[in-house]
Image 1 (cartoon, rainbow, N blue to C red):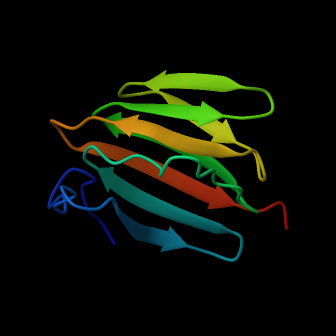
Image 2 (cartoon, rainbow, N blue to C red; image 1 turned 30 degrees about the vertical axis):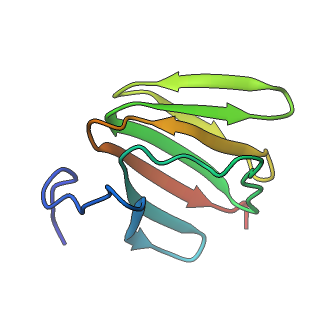
Length: 108
């Protein structure tokens, strides 16, 4: 299977859209497209999987806990979020699509 991460971007003006590109026993790879979305006030992700995410286009601000950290992401930036490290998307660019490549995996 082949493709281009920037072709046929879905309309994310109303909702963030996640598409599974590949998956295996202990791994899932997603393309996520955002446009102005953020996590709801007071909401924190607390995932049982590790998440490595790269920002390919647009911009975003991530907030992480334990320890407190705020990351301003631009194209090319990536971060590894260990399982159960609470995090949230504080903001994504409202005027252009923010395109993420996310890899979720377990230690399994």
